[in-house]
Length: 155
Image 1 (cartoon, rainbow, N blue to C red):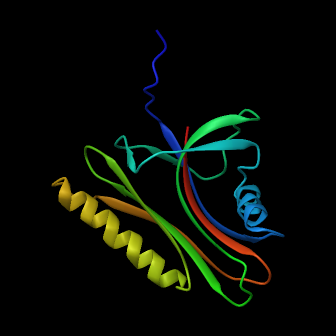
Image 2 (cartoon, rainbow, N blue to C red):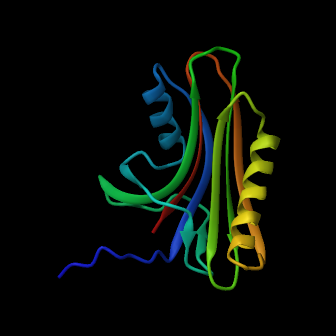
Image 3 (cartoon, rainbow, N blue to C red):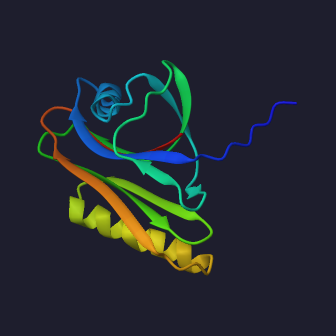
């Protein structure tokens, strides 16, 4: 019997922004900019094992791989609009917690504050003490169709 339970050992964390000819292309261009152009994402929720290693560059996934990912993105086709995204990875002794957020019309500082507050509340709800937090974020002023993406992919 094949098991569908996987436990990641490493993650890649990125926050990028890009333009495109359509919302889909702006999102896809974010994936390309993040070095994730050859994979399909499987959206998962925000709990990882403790002491997970963060890679400093995109992993070499096999072409067409289905990759578990925690992500949020905001896209707009209104020129001059601000799109922002952030993701926080918080280490505790028993779990690694992830909070993601993306929004149209708020700046990078606000989305960073949102994910910081959210990940702290996640730890509080589980009675866990955070030992370290890594936050990645991005903001982009839309020219034609813009997207901001914050993502954790699992390896």
